[in-house]
Image 1 (tube, rainbow, N blue to C red):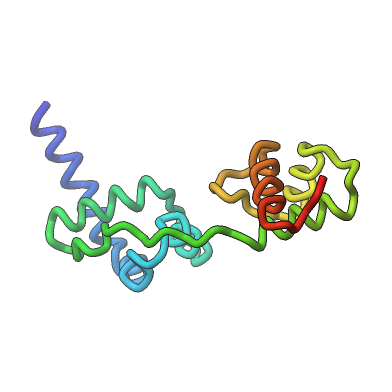
Image 2: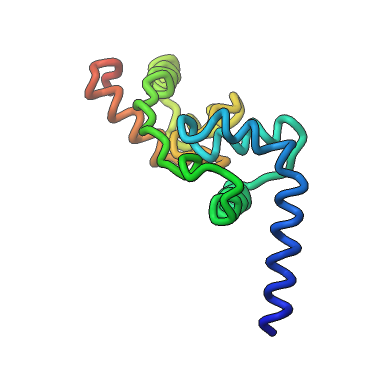
Length: 142
């Protein structure tokens, strides 16, 4: 069992090393200033097929084998709050005050706007949070 596990680990490392020349320079250029999500999005736009977890696992392995710099694993800086999303949600709500939170979420999905915490679809709770924030800033009154 131990030999099989070691062989599997070696095969994984060989695969990561053999493909590293195509993706590691991009990761070195972007990390840790950018989030893993952004790095994966850029790599996949270049024709790769990464997920955040797979890329992080590969980088961890490369660092452990001393083939990549430990700085790549550093935390990315916190992103400033997305006020353009807040302004967009407030504008939609002002333009049509009769829309429900779910309808505003559907509109944002149709506009291909990304939810503030990632994910694929807008949730009514995310819309409500942005509307509450817009109210606090005085951009929107119910």
